[in-house]
Image (cartoon, rainbow, N blue to C red):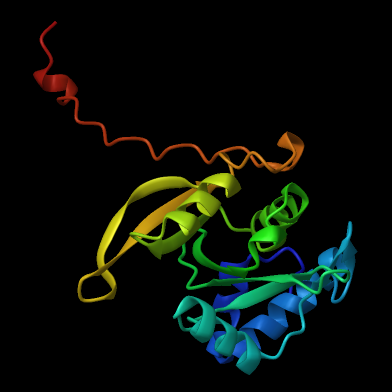
Length: 205
């Protein structure tokens, strides 16, 4: 497997990677030289090897969410206070976008953690866009999303259940203020529009 593959490409290499554990193991192995598997980031410890069943349970209890296809995760732990932040990225699409779910003690959302989280998602996983969905009336989660640099993009009606809408927040690699400018790739050129000018035989001279 090429070390230059993105998250989307890793998941597309083999159908057997569609399982949660299989996909994460493949991605974690690729990222081991970047962030772990258990490496220190400033004052926080980073973990890539958490058990999939434990990760799924944390999301169910603290976010009311399920782990989607192609999931991978990272956990930041403060060894002094024993607080932590778990971030799961899943459901990537062919355009380099995936959803991020964050379960965290509010004290963990420091500048250094946000910077490392964005580096992991954009530079490590090769994503171009991250989407976060919060409960529409959860003002605390909305404030955290803004602090992390996400822009409000709209409302997903009945996303969580009937009558329970989601606020949709997005961030692209080109709008991420936490990454060094030298690490951000050039934006792909826009697809040229079709030529709708009349044939030369119909043009008046």
